[in-house]
Length: 452
Image (cartoon, rainbow, N blue to C red; front, side, top):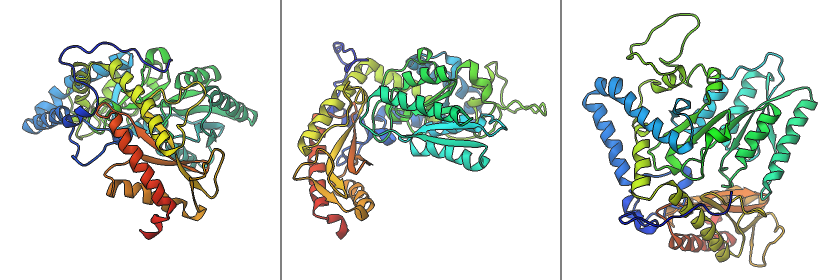
């Protein structure tokens, strides 16, 4: 995949991407939303659609929930299936990516011989890593969780090699690598992961692939039929402009029998011990789709907005290719600009693949304990004992004083920042980010965090 996605000319009447779009979102006028990757956001028109579905639910609850909702849900499933290039019978919705990962791991049957090993990378999203931790704790040694250590920046080939070596180590110890969790785009740092190649490696080595695409749909191109993961989940509320919480959950037909129940077992479960019925209307849909259609009474209006969000992205913004091309270009250019302001660097590998997404990671001129390789004379050093205090002070100060937030993280002994590109941002917003971060780092160097 190259550095840029295809571009096309702007049809008459199509919105111009950039800062002018802020007026179409419900942001506070003083807030600079530079962290779209954590919680997402929706345009006003989709907020209004959400309210409409909620109002329809309240107007005639039984009619809407029992008879109208399923058909509307199918429309959203079909719409997102087309975007991720997957058969519609393989696509359902769950509330978020962590819910999807839990659904898989709570359903999988673990061998009685105690040889099953779950593999994750050291950059795994903490909540998903804790799913594996919980199973290891719950089964008391019957299931093992092993972490594959990686340290950025590194090449995609090095990640694949680390995985292969981890599988070999598991097998050399007389155990089996049963399943591996890995990202499409990692959270911290926010970098593109070689997820397609990882699926191939898993298939070759007989390991189930659990793709945590929380950062995925609406941010990078997806072709699930071609990639063919064993399980895949991606948050629609992050990059697809869908209300929280909503995630597309893909399971190929060959693996649907492995998930007999939703995370909260509900009406779709087919029991072996009884012929218990359901008060819901009969459905001719497959067991997998039917199982996820109704999982207890909750506000499922966000699921119904998927088709509307995709239509808005197509008709107003110009479609997926245009959006992704804009995000990637802005991410690369904006991140480089902020690094220039700070006199640091963007996290990247030699082939430039890590920034083929909508999030960039910029090193701060702040070190922990001692300066490392590439440090400048003007860089500041935070005492080891102050690492967490300085971290929390920076995060809170960004919110309280600068009316913005960018995701902080530590790699090695250095602080880094993650910035999210988005359709309502342009280079002026990265200028704001550079100014805020430069001043914030200067204040850390003066130990302002100790005065809080």
